[in-house]
Image (cartoon, rainbow, N blue to C red; front, side, top):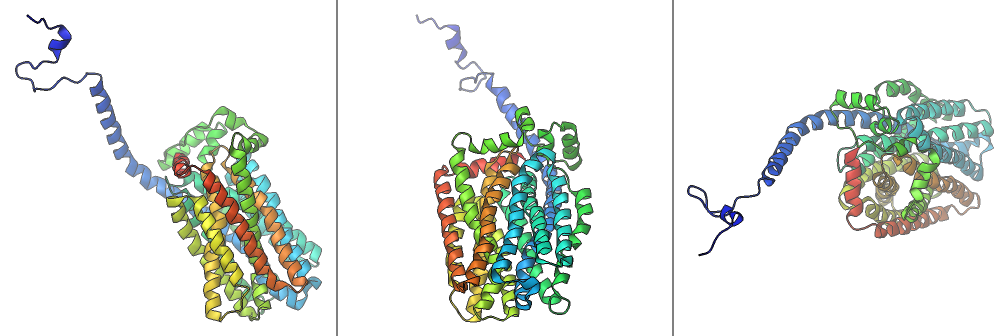
Length: 482
C-alpha cells in the first residue's frame, strides 16, 4: 500500500473544499496590501491633483509674467533699431548697432552662467526677483542715456538680468510641472517670451514716432512694480528647500497646498558647491551629451538673437516699409507662441531632442526663404512658419536638459547650456551688423540658416545617442518626482 506523507496529503481535497490546491498563506497578505495601496492612491490623488494643480498654475502664471517682461526688454532694442539708424541717434551705424546688440547678449551670457549656480545655493525665488529688478532699472539707464557708452552699459546690465531670469524660471516651473508634462509646461512658459516680443513691436509702433524712442525704454521700467508681487506670492522650490536641509519649511509648504514632497536629495547634493554641480555634467558618459547640447545651443541662440535683433532692419533692406517690418515682428512672435505649444506636446510624446532637430531643419529652410523677395502674403506666411519652428527649437534644447537633469543640479545644467549658447547670442547680432555694414545684408539670412543647420546636426546626434524611449521615460520620472 502507498503511504502518503503530510505534504502530499495537504494538497488533496477534503470534504467541503473546492478541488484546487491551497495557495501559500504568505501570498495572501501581499495581495491585500496591494489592494489597500491602490485604494489609498485612488482616494488621495484627486485632492493632490486639484490643489496641486492650483499651486502649479500659480507658479507658472507668475513665471509667465516675469518672462513676458523679459521678452519685452529683449525685443525692444530690435523694434526701435530701424528708427535709431534712420535718425542716426548717438551716431549709430550698422556695425556699432550690432555691437550694442551684442552688449546685451554678453550680459545675458554672464547672467546665465552665474544664475544656475547662484539659484542652486541661494534659492530660485530670490534670484528671479533680483533679475526683474535689475533689467527694469537697467532699462531706465537706457531711457536716460546721453551717449552710446551709457546706453551700452544699460543694455549690458539689462542682459545680466535677462540671462539670469530665463533658466531660473524654467527650473522653477519644472519643479511644479505635472507628471509627464515637463516639456509642455516649459513650452507654455516660453510663449511669454514671444508675447513680450509682440508687445515690444506695438510699443515701438505706438510710441516711437509720436513720443520718441526713449518712451519705449521707460515702458520697460514698469516691471519694477511687479517685483514685490513676485516676492510675495511665488513659493520657493521644494527640491531646493530639501537640498538645503530646510525640511520643515518644505513640509509646511507641501502640506498647505496638499502636494507631494519630491524625493529628498542626498546630503552630498545639498552640500555640493557650484563646481561639484558643474562637474556632475561631465561625469561618466555625460560629457559627450553636455557638449552636444552646448554646441546646439550656440547655433540656436545665434539664430534666435541674430534674427530677433535684425529682422525689422533686414526686412527694411529688402524694400519693406517700417510699419510692415514691425508687423513681421508681430507675426514672427505669434508663430513663436504657436510653436511653443505645438513643440511642447510633440516633445512630451516623441522626445524633445528629436523634435528640436526636426524644428531646426525647418527653421533653416524658412530663414533662407526670407532672403528671397516674395509677395507680401507669402512673406507673412514664411515669417509666421519660421517663428513657429525657430523659437521652439531652441526651447526644446532647454526642455531636454531640464528633464534629463536631477533636481539637485537642474538649474546648473540649464544655466550652463543657456550660458554656452549665449556665446552664439553675442555673435549673432554682431554678425548681422557686420554684414549690413559691408552691404551684404542679403547674406544675413543665409548665415543664420547655416547656424540652424548646425544645431540640427548637434541635437540630432544627441538624440541618436539617447536610448530609444529611455530619455522620455526617465524624463517623465524626473518631472513627476518634483
